[in-house]
Amino acid sequence: MVSNNALQLEGIYPPIPTPFDAKGHVATKALTGNVRIWNKYELRGYVVLGSNGELVLLNDQERLRVLEVARAAIPADKLMIAGTGCQSTLQTIELTRQAAAIGADAALVITPSYYRGRMTKEVLIQHFHTVADTASIPVIIYNMPACTGIDLDATTVIAVAEHENIIGIKDSGGNVVKMGEIRHLAGPTFQVLAGSASFLLPALSVGAVGGVLALANIAPHQCLAIRQHFLDNEWEQARALQIQMIPVNTAVTRGWGVPALKTAMDMLGMYGGLPRPPLLPLSEDKKEDLRCILQEAELSLLR
Image 1 (cartoon, rainbow, N blue to C red):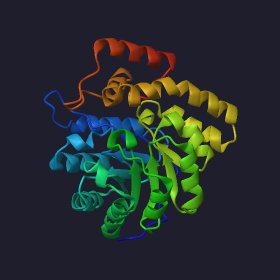
Image 2 (cartoon, one colour):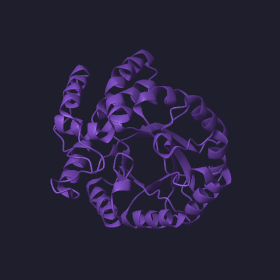
Image 3 (cartoon, rainbow, N blue to C red):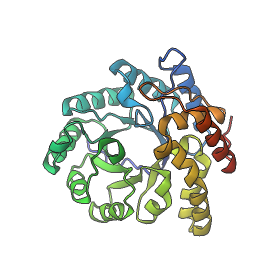
């Protein structure tokens, strides 16, 4: 284990989708092309193999290939945070080791959840601490109750955060009060990242240092601007932009999810492509609804 509390997470990160070709294989050229577009923005880095990356639908070889291709396209001054959370502690340790060898700067570890009823505070503390003990890169907790059915409470997060190699949390639960409590009690070196653009500004107001935002894949400028307005104490501008982005964010997250995010990328000149089954493509009527939402938000990307 290597302690690396010096790794600063401040900024905005898109959790990038994994593109597939017409045969369902990982489309490596499309992945490289997408990253090159995102590189034109002042993003702090990328989350690769997160929930939007369809990590759970990829086999072991595909996961490593996605990490390799992404790392080659990501400049050295931008972080690559690799999603390495698996159902078993041993699997998580191994994927974290492989991600570090490829060049990941940190590991994002989601709570194991299949045996949800047995995932007590003690079990989760031991899981995260065991992974952090063996990791050569810093570990970030990933709280994603919508997918796992487990919502880490503040006391559990604070206990997990006592490990010197666990440097932060991506919290997608949306409980801003809890985020503030964690930020207050876990100490100044523990960093909180908002897990959705729907509550980016509120999270920043209680001490979050940035966000891992699905919206940043299709609206990086707007996500960056919300944070910059906050830093510049331009509260009215930040509030207006936060509200403007809510319909778009809802569409590509809890509304229609990964299929909508990939469709939006296609509509904005990137490569989204199809989701991997059992996820279904967005229906034609929802595509039209999504197109209207994007137009109303006046979104456009650098080509």
